[in-house]
Image 1: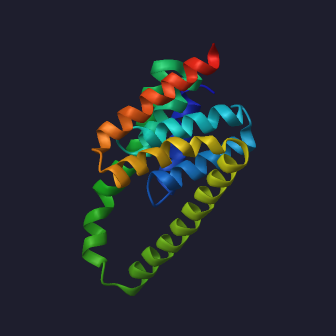
Image 2 (image 1 turned 90 degrees about the horizontal axis):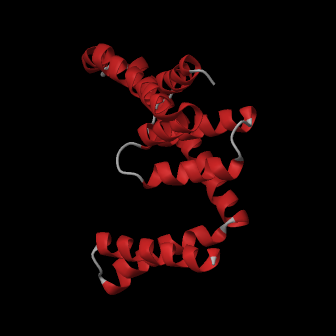
Image 3 (image 1 turned 120 degrees about the vertical axis):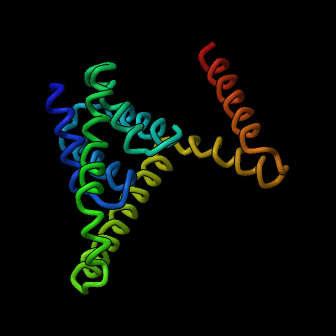
Amino acid sequence: MTLFELFFFFFRISAVTFGGGIVILGMVQLDQEKRKDIDPNEFADIVSLAASMPGPIAVSLSWLMGKHYKGLIGSFVAVLGAILPPFIIVLILSPLVLKYSHVTQVQGFFNGVLAGTGAIITVVVFKNVRKTLSSRWWNFVPFLLVIGLIGGLRMHPLLAMALVIALQFAREKVISI
Protein backbone atom coordinates (compact mmCIF):
# COMPACT_ATOMS: atom_id res chain seq x y z
CA MET A 1 0.00 0.00 0.00
CA THR A 2 1.50 3.34 -1.05
CA LEU A 3 1.35 6.43 1.17
CA PHE A 4 -1.37 7.90 -1.04
CA GLU A 5 -3.40 4.68 -0.87
CA LEU A 6 -2.98 4.64 2.90
CA PHE A 7 -4.13 8.25 3.21
CA PHE A 8 -7.07 7.74 0.85
CA PHE A 9 -8.08 4.47 2.57
CA PHE A 10 -8.57 6.18 5.93
CA PHE A 11 -9.85 9.42 4.37
CA ARG A 12 -12.57 7.52 2.47
CA ILE A 13 -13.65 5.44 5.48
CA SER A 14 -13.60 8.43 7.83
CA ALA A 15 -15.55 10.60 5.38
CA VAL A 16 -18.48 8.22 4.96
CA THR A 17 -18.88 6.72 8.42
CA PHE A 18 -20.97 8.13 11.21
CA GLY A 19 -20.70 6.83 14.75
CA GLY A 20 -17.05 7.23 15.59
CA GLY A 21 -14.16 4.87 15.96
CA ILE A 22 -16.05 1.63 16.46
CA VAL A 23 -17.81 2.09 13.13
CA ILE A 24 -14.50 2.98 11.47
CA LEU A 25 -13.01 -0.13 13.06
CA GLY A 26 -15.80 -2.19 11.54
CA MET A 27 -15.23 -0.73 8.09
CA VAL A 28 -11.46 -1.32 8.33
CA GLN A 29 -12.10 -4.87 9.50
CA LEU A 30 -14.42 -5.55 6.57
CA ASP A 31 -11.82 -4.19 4.17
CA GLN A 32 -9.08 -6.30 5.76
CA GLU A 33 -11.21 -9.43 5.38
CA LYS A 34 -11.38 -8.72 1.63
CA ARG A 35 -7.80 -7.50 1.25
CA LYS A 36 -6.16 -10.27 3.35
CA ASP A 37 -2.78 -8.51 3.44
CA ILE A 38 -2.52 -8.62 7.23
CA ASP A 39 -2.55 -11.89 9.16
CA PRO A 40 -5.88 -12.12 11.07
CA ASN A 41 -4.08 -12.68 14.40
CA GLU A 42 -1.84 -9.68 13.77
CA PHE A 43 -4.88 -7.58 12.86
CA ALA A 44 -6.60 -8.72 16.08
CA ASP A 45 -3.51 -7.61 18.01
CA ILE A 46 -3.58 -4.22 16.25
CA VAL A 47 -7.27 -3.81 17.13
CA SER A 48 -6.66 -4.84 20.76
CA LEU A 49 -3.79 -2.40 21.10
CA ALA A 50 -5.75 0.40 19.42
CA ALA A 51 -8.70 -0.21 21.75
CA SER A 52 -6.50 -0.12 24.82
CA MET A 53 -4.70 3.11 23.91
CA PRO A 54 -5.99 6.43 25.23
CA GLY A 55 -7.80 8.67 22.79
CA PRO A 56 -10.08 7.98 19.86
CA ILE A 57 -9.84 4.41 18.57
CA ALA A 58 -9.96 5.62 14.95
CA VAL A 59 -6.76 7.60 15.46
CA SER A 60 -5.02 4.75 17.31
CA LEU A 61 -6.09 2.25 14.67
CA SER A 62 -4.95 4.45 11.78
CA TRP A 63 -1.64 5.08 13.55
CA LEU A 64 -0.96 1.37 14.07
CA MET A 65 -2.08 0.35 10.58
CA GLY A 66 -0.03 3.14 9.03
CA LYS A 67 3.00 1.96 11.01
CA HIS A 68 2.37 -1.60 9.83
CA TYR A 69 2.33 -0.60 6.17
CA LYS A 70 4.79 2.28 5.91
CA GLY A 71 6.48 2.88 9.27
CA LEU A 72 6.40 6.20 11.09
CA ILE A 73 5.58 8.30 8.01
CA GLY A 74 2.73 5.89 7.25
CA SER A 75 1.38 6.49 10.75
CA PHE A 76 1.25 10.24 10.22
CA VAL A 77 -0.29 9.90 6.76
CA ALA A 78 -2.96 7.44 7.99
CA VAL A 79 -3.87 9.63 10.99
CA LEU A 80 -4.15 12.67 8.73
CA GLY A 81 -6.48 10.70 6.47
CA ALA A 82 -8.59 9.66 9.46
CA ILE A 83 -8.95 13.08 11.12
CA LEU A 84 -9.24 15.38 8.11
CA PRO A 85 -12.79 14.41 6.97
CA PRO A 86 -14.50 14.88 10.36
CA PHE A 87 -12.70 18.18 10.82
CA ILE A 88 -13.84 19.44 7.42
CA ILE A 89 -17.38 18.11 7.85
CA VAL A 90 -17.82 19.68 11.29
CA LEU A 91 -16.32 22.95 10.09
CA ILE A 92 -18.63 23.20 7.07
CA LEU A 93 -21.82 21.42 8.10
CA SER A 94 -22.27 22.26 11.77
CA PRO A 95 -23.74 25.73 11.11
CA LEU A 96 -26.21 24.18 8.64
CA VAL A 97 -27.18 21.33 10.95
CA LEU A 98 -27.79 23.77 13.79
CA LYS A 99 -29.84 26.03 11.53
CA TYR A 100 -32.00 23.24 10.07
CA SER A 101 -32.11 20.74 12.96
CA HIS A 102 -35.87 21.26 13.35
CA VAL A 103 -36.60 20.14 9.74
CA THR A 104 -38.21 16.69 9.60
CA GLN A 105 -35.94 15.42 6.81
CA VAL A 106 -32.80 16.39 8.75
CA GLN A 107 -34.13 14.64 11.86
CA GLY A 108 -35.00 11.59 9.74
CA PHE A 109 -31.49 11.52 8.30
CA PHE A 110 -29.93 11.49 11.77
CA ASN A 111 -32.38 8.82 12.97
CA GLY A 112 -31.29 6.66 10.02
CA VAL A 113 -27.64 7.30 10.80
CA LEU A 114 -28.28 6.30 14.42
CA ALA A 115 -29.92 3.02 13.36
CA GLY A 116 -27.16 2.16 10.88
CA THR A 117 -24.45 3.02 13.39
CA GLY A 118 -26.07 0.81 16.00
CA ALA A 119 -26.22 -2.09 13.56
CA ILE A 120 -22.56 -1.75 12.55
CA ILE A 121 -21.41 -1.51 16.16
CA THR A 122 -23.44 -4.62 17.05
CA VAL A 123 -21.94 -6.62 14.17
CA VAL A 124 -18.36 -5.53 14.99
CA VAL A 125 -18.69 -6.32 18.69
CA PHE A 126 -20.37 -9.68 18.02
CA LYS A 127 -17.73 -10.77 15.47
CA ASN A 128 -14.81 -9.74 17.66
CA VAL A 129 -16.20 -11.34 20.82
CA ARG A 130 -17.00 -14.55 18.94
CA LYS A 131 -13.53 -14.67 17.37
CA THR A 132 -11.81 -13.96 20.68
CA LEU A 133 -13.84 -16.51 22.62
CA SER A 134 -13.40 -19.22 20.00
CA SER A 135 -9.67 -18.84 19.42
CA ARG A 136 -8.12 -16.96 22.32
CA TRP A 137 -10.56 -16.98 25.20
CA TRP A 138 -7.77 -16.31 27.72
CA ASN A 139 -7.54 -12.74 26.40
CA PHE A 140 -10.57 -11.99 28.55
CA VAL A 141 -8.83 -13.09 31.75
CA PRO A 142 -6.90 -9.81 32.25
CA PHE A 143 -10.09 -7.76 31.72
CA LEU A 144 -12.01 -9.91 34.18
CA LEU A 145 -9.14 -9.69 36.67
CA VAL A 146 -9.08 -5.87 36.42
CA ILE A 147 -12.85 -5.73 36.89
CA GLY A 148 -12.58 -8.04 39.89
CA LEU A 149 -9.81 -5.99 41.49
CA ILE A 150 -11.68 -2.73 40.98
CA GLY A 151 -15.14 -3.99 41.89
CA GLY A 152 -14.32 -6.63 44.49
CA LEU A 153 -11.28 -5.21 46.25
CA ARG A 154 -12.03 -1.52 45.55
CA MET A 155 -8.53 -1.12 44.10
CA HIS A 156 -7.72 2.07 42.21
CA PRO A 157 -8.20 1.43 38.44
CA LEU A 158 -4.66 2.49 37.51
CA LEU A 159 -3.17 0.27 40.19
CA ALA A 160 -5.36 -2.65 39.09
CA MET A 161 -4.30 -2.23 35.45
CA ALA A 162 -0.62 -1.93 36.43
CA LEU A 163 -0.86 -5.11 38.52
CA VAL A 164 -2.52 -7.06 35.72
CA ILE A 165 0.02 -5.79 33.16
CA ALA A 166 2.83 -6.92 35.47
CA LEU A 167 1.17 -10.33 35.80
CA GLN A 168 0.86 -10.57 32.00
CA PHE A 169 4.56 -9.78 31.55
CA ALA A 170 5.45 -12.37 34.21
CA ARG A 171 3.23 -14.97 32.51
CA GLU A 172 4.83 -14.29 29.12
CA LYS A 173 8.31 -14.63 30.59
CA VAL A 174 7.41 -17.96 32.19
CA ILE A 175 5.86 -19.27 28.95
CA SER A 176 8.86 -18.18 26.83
CA ILE A 177 11.38 -19.97 29.09
